[in-house]
Image (cartoon, rainbow, N blue to C red; front, side, top):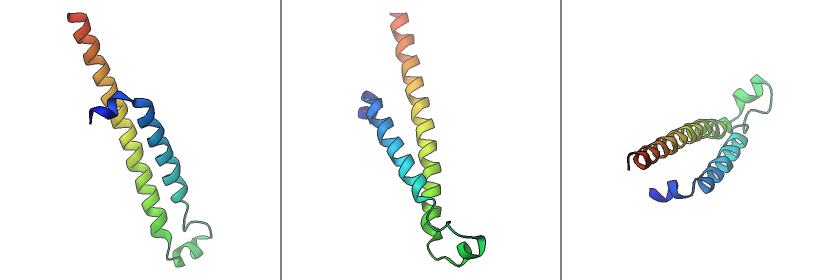
Length: 81
């Protein structure tokens, strides 16, 4: 787990690529009218993409908060020494 915090740029690049891919996947099955989309059997793929996109957004926010907390703790320890 510590490796994620050692190289945040790499982690953010992976998360952004995942975000873009899942957002693109969320369009599957939603390309026609409402009636055509209701008849489509592949709309579940788009739903997986959309929920994966939302979970990845949540992961980005949680990772950013964790990095901020880690930074503030290190800063506080450096000041107290």
